[in-house]
Image (tube, rainbow, N blue to C red; front, side):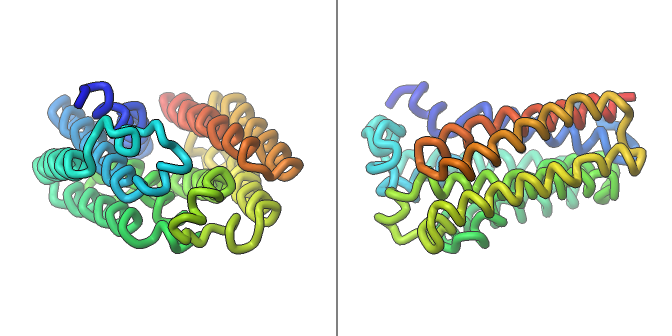
Length: 280
């Protein structure tokens, strides 16, 4: 079992993105202040819980991945299912420990996020849109965690960004259902793509993207961010609109995979716009 295989299992870039999202949550808190120890704990919690979720995801997806992603660590034989569960447990324990050392509120938030992620991996993957919402909650949880870390409560300023991120990620999850439609049929996953067809799924996913785009001026209008936010979020908005048009015109798995991957770039741009807009 190679180290690189374990890294592919836990997807370190996802953990780094979650840590960045925690810092964004801190940036839009009321106090906007945390100490170096809290930063370290936040990194371990972000990386640990994200890595745990990713490893558990691959464990429960191992049969589907034989069809969709046979080169993933588990179906390829590089990592055993038992090793994936063990690694997931270790990372979850580390993440919860550092959350507990941060504060009771942080521990509760981390525990809820981990519980939602685990329930999703075990049961909600077959639940279609409900499962999509569960994933989106785990994606926005770091924003909430950052606010709790700094203030001890969730600032309304953070909630504005949580809504935008929730909508955009839900759109991506719906589109992902188009990408995985063949593998999902193996396990009976009730995505919109399988229940209502690829075209309907493309329109629903694009609808979530466009809803996020339409609400994106709110942070500036509410004076939560400075003017630096606008050009960057405009670039992200243009990307979401582009992906929406492309997937509606061609709601096929290959195009959905391309746009799903591009959406990560648009989401990163949006995160950068949040950061730039909140620094002043």
